[in-house]
Image (cartoon, rainbow, N blue to C red; front, top):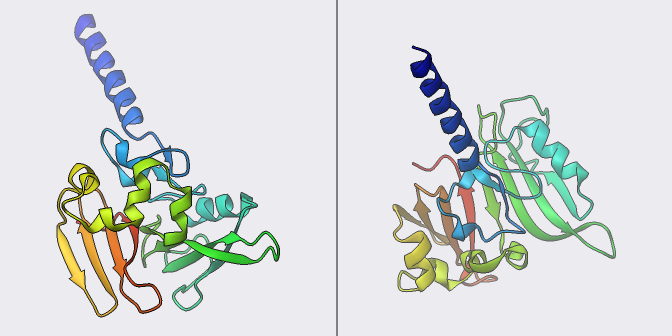
Length: 200
């Protein structure tokens, strides 16, 4: 019986350690996220925020940074109460070194109605210089070209395509990634992406 108990405890410890290793957080600005052995969108950290993070912790992380400016999207944000479960959206910008105000648009954090954690993080085009290695290819034609080596290695095949007069969106449900091609006149073929835990 003692041996059986020891085996069970050992298995539990191994499972716990494996689970911790599997959920290791990776920094978007320091790691090529496309080279992870098993890509998990919820492990990608950017400016202290990641998918599933509550409003209180995400906003505290944003406030701690001196190189960005952030603001609520007041058109879509129902409440700025960090404990609320209402829809909340936040724009994040690079801080202009001269004016100290809003510079380039970098990110968009989205909490859907009823959600307690970030549901989507949109990485705008101006995030590309901060990406590492092949992650930069999520902002260029390689991300929409099934013939590219990057596409065949990382994205492989989209699960759903949605088109409109302004965008084409490809969803990769298992990876929780959406690649977006913007087709507006002022930004022809602008490509960027989001991490989206609601994809399924």
